[in-house]
Length: 246
Length: 84
Image (tube, rainbow over all chains, first blue to last red; front, side, top):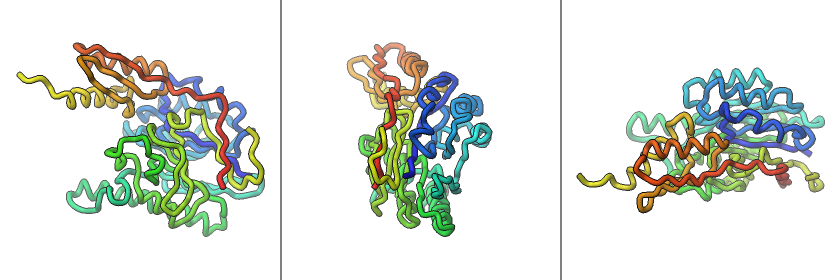
């Protein structure tokens, strides 16, 4: 049994102090790992990350995160990452980590990702330099996720979760305006997950979307943006032979 | 002088809610009708919810602002799903 707790888009600011930790006191009884799907801060500054760090410090389970677009807003994402790392959060960006769950290695590959949209309605690597840069950035991010997932598979890690901020599928965007789908995710991310394989894909970013979806290749996707799940976190149980408690 | 088209008026409010550091939210819905501005959506804290109204009033001082945004509630316990 592998229990994955996850949430995204908590948008921490100075006014967020004390709002999350009370809901995390028994998280280690509910889950084996805690994933954070980006937009951890409001403006992407160390002062905000410090408030979140104090809410997370000392939690008795691995915490793995990716950053989101808000965390990059002030061009200080490195400081945000450093503050969170100091509190025990492992930040991924086109990289992977392995956590041990009762002797079973569980791999988490993570990337922030980017937009561009979905088949039939996506940007193309064509035209002005800025347009090509936009699409190529999204492709490179997805490629790094795929490579991280493949590396886990190559190392014999059978259980793998893909963590990202932007959406890999349109299904979890239902509820958002169609016109903004290209700014909410990219089929490149879904393709990366489908090509490399994973047991579960988790993302945030789409506050007006839907929790449950799947990639074109049939991998289950969960949108854990906090305005979607309306919880401090949800728990996704892999290899559960019996219904989990709670 | 012709009045500013309503599309641009609402977009100015959206842009301000995104850019103003007191709010920094992109998901607040802005609608205008008969001189009234209606703001809906979820925000993380009460302070930010109040700031939504303040910012909207600064952008449109001549409009009646109805701040109907709510603070995201975190619920009692996590939902647990078995992934097959």
